[in-house]
Each structure stands twice: as structure tokens, then as C-alpha cells.
Image (cartoon, rainbow over all chains, first blue to last red; front, side):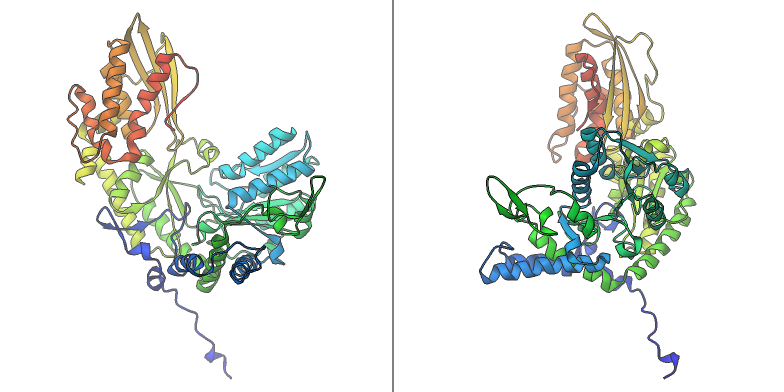
Length: 415
Length: 150
């Protein structure tokens, strides 16, 4: 057979993807919704919404403890969701996936359990200047409890984390490094694979905050080599209130439980409790069962669309947005890393981001304004806040143009 | 654009561009900091109290048009007023901002502060308009902590 019969590359059909998101056909203030706040949370496709409903209409029961049919069905679906998330992230086994409420809880879990077992006064935790508050505060709490020190890798004017600055701050006292894969405030894609290799060379484990990366880039935790990877379903076109912590089995075995309660135990007497096996050791109480099931549906759906295709489409939007917005007088893009996800953080001369947000909202355009839960990033650039447009797999070049048109209305009013 | 013009009235845009009483005050008897963590607005308010009167008031900081104009117009409105009068004014102002959106506010007795009547259509912006007043409250109570709108 000749090579000419090879299947042609699938065309990225953004319109048929949009059609799968019921909310995208609504209007806001009489204008078609232009949703550019995807780094905050993404919209949900029909399959995700329907699966949630189906669970409650047809399968609802508590899991891991029922002898009845429904409970078995619910358990199967929930654990099926875990297996899907494990596959999506490239984990070796579903037992390396702990369901959490989201990235924040996943990081808190590690910060709490790790510090309890391995952190002492004088030890150091290394983070970067790009982190979201949820990858700063849990470590500060751990440091407060133990007397350890939080060390921060400074970022450049372009919003990048230089690998040599990271390496310089790894000391014999460094017990763990926690870095974001993609910055929520600036869009910077950090060279996490390189940073992990550097840290591992001196036996420092690495946690990656993957909240902003998982919906945009193909993730393979085995290839990255990270020890922990945290994600939130709601930024991945899935439901809120559910996320996952990937942890290498050897680490999860070593860490003490995070919370105590039902489902995380093997046996309990008043003298001694033995804990359940992985991953249930870290899942106390009745889980977000529907969430786990639907999270699985969301990642399968994402895989169906194709992460590489999504990344290419969003990169095209980023290039178009960067070019279009840069042409607006007085507009400054904050964060100009060479490797960037489709996030454009910007300021406009003489107009506060909050005012930009209100005026755009009346045009049906949803963006985020403020500090993006990354106050140290704002301080680094000496600005009180930015306006941020963040793109998802269903956004179009026309929506970028609508944003630019909305911004000229802002300039008109404040000009 | 109508509601937007209700919010961003010319007077507000003017005060945003050239705020009144925007300066440091060397002889302030009270200084308070205001912070809206949601949008990053920061404000430093200076008050000089003479007996039971606000003899002078000034502010500095960064914020959106609504918070800056509100601070500017507030300083004009309360300068020379007694502490009780300032408090009453705050009460009326707050009512203007948070009243039901379908009832048109008349802003009677509020003077220039009435330009903020459009804010009630934008619940997300009420905190911007009240930041200066919260900070004033902190200053008048002589509290040390940062006034928050949260």
C-alpha cells in the first residue's frame, strides 16, 4: 500500500466543539457570550453535564461499602473515573491517583502529610515567584508548623523561571520543590521536566501544580518524572469540587494520612487504627462520587478532542491575541515568556483593570481582573492588578477581535 | 451603553482623572489604610481632626475609577463636617449604593455623592465605591488594622 492512503490530519472543527457547550449559545447583557475566563474555570460540554445527571437519576448510592447492586454500580463508575484520570495523566496505576476537591486540596494534602513526616526546623521548601496562592500558602503553613523555611526562585522581567536560579537555591536542606507547570497569572510554561531533573539530581522530590497545564498540554507524569502532580477538574471542562493528586506510589506509601474518617481505614479499634491501601488511605469520608465519575468523562472527552490539537489551536489564538492586543495604544502585555499557554495578562494606561472588566462585561465579554490569586506576581511587576484574557479549546479568532473591539470602547470612555 | 454611562458619569471620570485632595498630609491626626484584595485597590487616608470636626482630609493610592472618584468626592463632601455629620452621610451613601436596583435613587441630601446612584446596577462594584468610606471609618475609630471591603 502506498503512503498516500495515510489518513489526513483531522481538521480542528471549533464550531462543532462549540456546539457541544450549551452555555456558549447564551447571551449576556443582550450580547453573545464571549467567554475568555478559562484559566478561572472552563465551561462544560453536554457529555459532562449529562453524565452528572445520569448518575443522580440512575446510579446514586454510596461506594465501597454496599452489598446492593446500586452501590456496586456506583463504585465501579467512580473507580472507573479514577482509572481514566490515571490514564490521562500517564500514571502507572490508578492507585497513584487520589481524588481531592481540587488542586488546592491536593497541594494541601502533600504539604500537610509531607511536613508531618519529613520536615524539620531549618529545612527548606523551594517554590517559584510565579506561584498561585494555593502553591504558596500550604507551604507557609507547613513551615510555620515545623520551623522550616520557604525559599523562592525569582522570576525574570518576561515572567520566566530560569533553571540556573532554581538550581542555585537547592541546598542540602531543601526537602521538596513545588513549581507550577503553567502560570495562571502570566501563562508562562515552566520547563518543569528540566527543573525536575535538576532537583532529582540532588534527591529533592518535586510537586507540580498542573491546574493550568492539564487542560492545555499533553501531560505524562512518568515522562516528566515528577513525584506529585495536582489538577482540578473544573479547569479541564469537568465539574467543580473534584480534582486529583497524582503521587508516585512509593511516596504515597510513605506519607501519613491527611484526614481521618470513614473509607480511609482498614480496621479501627480504640487502641489502634490501620489505614486502607492506596489511594483510599487519603480519601476520608464519602467522596464526591458524581464528581469522580464525571471527571473521568471530561478527561476522556479531552483525549477525544486531542491535547496536541487543542494546544495548537490555542497557540494560534495566543499569537493572534498577542498581535491584536499589542496594537492597541497604551496596552502592555505582562508576561512575555517564550513558552506560553493561551493567557494574555495586560494593563491599559490610565484605566484600572476593574473598569476594563465592567465595560467588557456589558459587551458580553467575560475576562478576569485583579490579582489572580497571585499577589506576589503583581508585586514583582509593580502593578496593582491586570486584566486577563485566557483562552480555551472553543474560543475563536473572532472572539479575540471582539475583545479588541471591546477594549477600544474602554479607551473611548476613558480617553 | 446606557447603564455604563449611568455608572461612569462624567463627574466620576473627571474625579478619576484629577482626584481632589490627592496628597500626603504631614499633620494628619489619623491615618488608615484601605485594601480591596479582590481587585488590588490600595488606599491611604489622612484625616486631621479638630475637636469634633474633620478639619482636613486627603488620600493617596491606586484603584479603579469608581474607588478613586469615590474617595475624591468623599474628601470634598466631609471636609469641615462634624464626625456625626460624616457618619450620617455614610449611612445615606450606603443606602444609595445598596438600595433595590429597580427603584431609581434620588440621592437627596447627598449633593455630589449622588453621582454614584448608578452603582446599584453593578453589585460587583459596590465595594469599590465604599472602600474610601470603610477606610474613613477605620481612621475615625483610630483602629490600627487595614480596612477591608471583604
